[in-house]
Length: 274
Length: 274
Image (cartoon, rainbow over all chains, first blue to last red; front, side):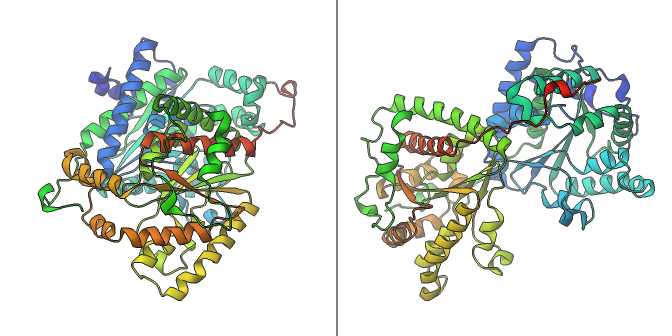
């Protein structure tokens, strides 16, 4: 599968300037990777390749990769971190979860906490939720005036352009699940004792606002899929396919970045170790 | 091996109030775990157990674990992170490397940047170097007046006591390698092209100060091995044994912490998901 990642990428990418058409995108998309065993094999291979590429990224020390994960409750953000970046280990991957902002965070503009968590050179940073919450939950729950939210799409585009012009490659993945799949996953949290702690009754309130969230996502994906930082809508009803697709795109992106080990400015013979 | 982790722990721990006796501690210590295959098997089992225990620690959300890794150049701090915490994935483990302090860090007291990186509830934090550099390299290189350094041992003990009284369990590992082993590892960085970038000519200057560093470690280990946060001196000439010992102690410590999944204050029947 690793040979045709561009084909898959093409299928999931929201073309800059076009509507995201979320409702037309199949959360299963069996045609993208048909065989589960093949998907798992490619995930394993890609995850190992990502690990090796990150090592070179660290050694090169001039650029960073930022992976933004967005999706409604149960869409599989944690599972993606574990599945795709687990094999990398904690040394070169920093995960930042963005929950409800603290008082201090709210006392700053909404990109302040985001900027502070952008990965440094050599690191892969993963955002579990992100600044997009400021045009998603904030919009649906009317936590800011419409006019303020309206300005944010362009502000976000400018911010991401700034990052990409300064050595941070930005990959944005929206984990797209169906309403039925969310129901099953929420029910599982109720039914399986070891998953009980993950269940939050407030998630059901958000589920009642399903359509409003889909509309807010449609707008965000459409207005913030840019040439420098396009959105990818990942079919996420099947966890294995979700992971395989994301791993293939992350690997392909890192291979295009082609991080290089620095050449030493010395020869081994210059040194004698006593 | 997992049944007798306390025995190994006893052997590597510096008893509070006693001299660390670094020069009497064998960096190989074959007796601690004799068989390499058994050591690798126990590492694998322990690393998986640590992963499961961290999940419960996160769900419980009341305590954190801080793992401090100290050791001279090439002693294997990165390798320990990868070997012991790699299987945990990046979700529940935060690694903080402490290098030469920045101007802003130097404008604060030396524990300021350390406190800022203490893991939050539910997280395993790993320090790659730490506040101990402020009584190690700072002492050997005379980067602060002797009188200032002299006060730090008690300040560090007070700081660590504060952490343990506030839900952060502190595990401190000194990776103990022999001078010959360091020579081999430095030489390998010179000889192997893919390791060249890890070689820093300045490491050779530190190697010339080997005895001074050992003395500074002896003092730090002796004065800062406390009942609430004892030091462990890990034989680190063999990477597999180093990893196996540390994993066994981390697992044993987490098992003693016995993190528990919270009980839900609802019944599954309370909710109907539409």
